[in-house]
Length: 187
Ligand code: ZN
Image (cartoon, rainbow, N blue to C red; front, side):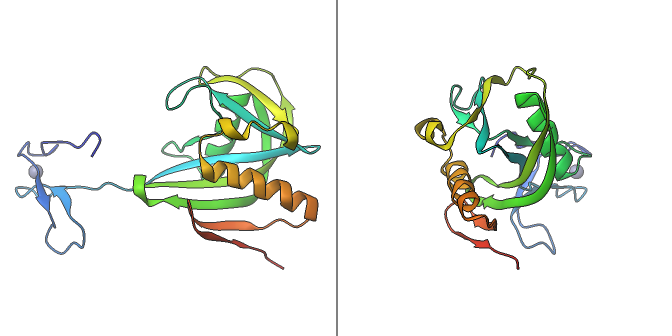
């Protein structure tokens, strides 16, 4: 477990692993003062942004997997809404100011305790200025998308679905995990 504390932050006793009284999960906890170290999933928020049939991707400058392409997305900060987090990540990673108009995908990756929330958004302004986590960004025609350089299968699937749905003119919302789930069409 990354960054698991060893000592209780309140009374400095060594934390024990086990199921605390009245709890349902094994957790690190303090048998002295009752402190419980909760580990909850992290939320990653991002956007799929299409402009005139082209799709916004950014190329990572930092680990993991520098040089690969992905949708602009990143970890929510405390105090943000998911929409604010998604738009901030788009801004930081591509310099694009965007506006969200619909949810598009909610997928869980329980293996690593992460939840991805991806919105559909539209470009308000393209400033050309972006942060140091990105090497470059580009709007790709579907035929030019570097599929082999998009590391995450779930991100490839989101792009593939969007391209097909755009052709059909009907958009769904995916809910599931990173390999099985369902696209919900709301009528
Ligand atoms: Zn304690």
